[in-house]
Image 1 (cartoon, helix red, strand yellow):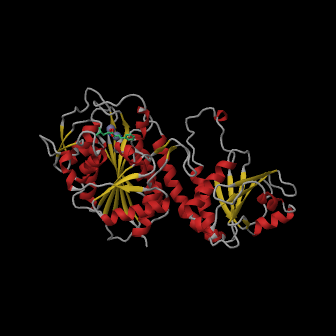
Image 2 (cartoon, protein in one colour):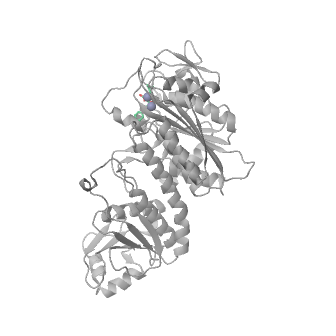
Image 3 (tube, rainbow, N blue to C red):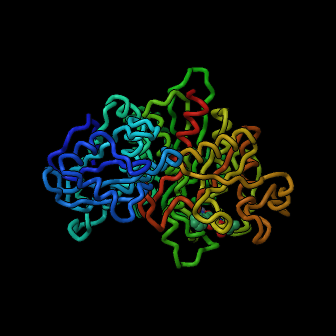
Length: 497
Ligand code: BES
Ligand code: ZN
Ligand code: ZN
């Protein structure tokens, strides 16, 4: 779907969307059209339940006296409640209303509106952003394209008088969508297609947009002593990979910021095998790695003024004659040992080595890791918030604020010393599970904390937010890409001001 910007003019075909705000106020273009239609729009606004609130729509099909196939009046609310997130939702809602109607073009007109203070260029860019975010589909495995109701919409024209302004705001937003879609594609792929090697190959393609990408194979990781990551991988016929991405858009001497992702391309649980019901969900146990790759693509795409590294640990967790057993003790790259009580608590083992490697090699100003780490975080927070754990209050506050800005919300949980005992092992430096059923997500974070040394660190447990079972205005069912927008925003606020 193409999105263009141009000055307000009357389109000759397709769908025309007119924004209505405040007390059912129309903008200049809408008023001109209303006149041509002998007041049809004003009459429509007076009728029925339309209040001009966000999500209120009126549709006029085949209007007389004007070439378009349909006019849609879309409410965006009053000045007090118009914000960028709501405009993005409006864009998403508009798109889902018109995408399957058969029109191939749509125009969305964003004029200034009397008595409502909002910046039309900014509004147009964010409506377009929301529309494109909601347009995501994953249809690669449908061989009979006519069996699904494919969207007819090919082109959206944003009509706004400050074309240049809107275009320039949209340029970076569009790169965020590219990163979100890259992530959603990775997360949607089945595990027979996306395994460590093929995942790494896809990431390698990002060299096209200026990222430096290194791929480590098993032998290389053995030399580095990554016994915890390799222990998880050893039961699988698919060999592991560690991928290091670098984007150097900041000052030469600036320490990089680092992002580390859990990339378990399929998590059967290993010998501590999971029940079969719902196990197919474990194809998206690489969600953290997907976000890191999508984020790095966004930073490179919009040429962010920052030095950033992304490290992802890619493994498949399988049971087999070669798989690790409950009770095995593995030695991590840091030298610390872990007793593997439960082979299904594998994400933390992968991250233990990926985190240690990252802080040791890059000495980053901060590390943020993302992982679909625990089922327990879903019990605690459901699908609305991701869990946040941090050893640095300022970093934590910044991330919470960035999340609020973009609608990817974080809720902080503790990782203080009072939980130290939960991961204490009788025979090794620590074990990989918590204390029975209590504080399962904290135990996971507690283990990760042992491998960040004294670096400023935050861990996002995204198990509840990586996959959506219901449609939301800017997120279709399935892979959400949660984390890409949030971390892009955080980088912008913290490093690019
Ligand atoms: N990948 C799972 C966590 C998960 C669960 C992600 C549901 C997404 C949806 C993780 O590797 C896991 O199995 N964790 C165990 C830990 C336990 C054995 C200590 C869990 O949460 O049950
Ligand atoms: Zn697991
Ligand atoms: Zn897992």
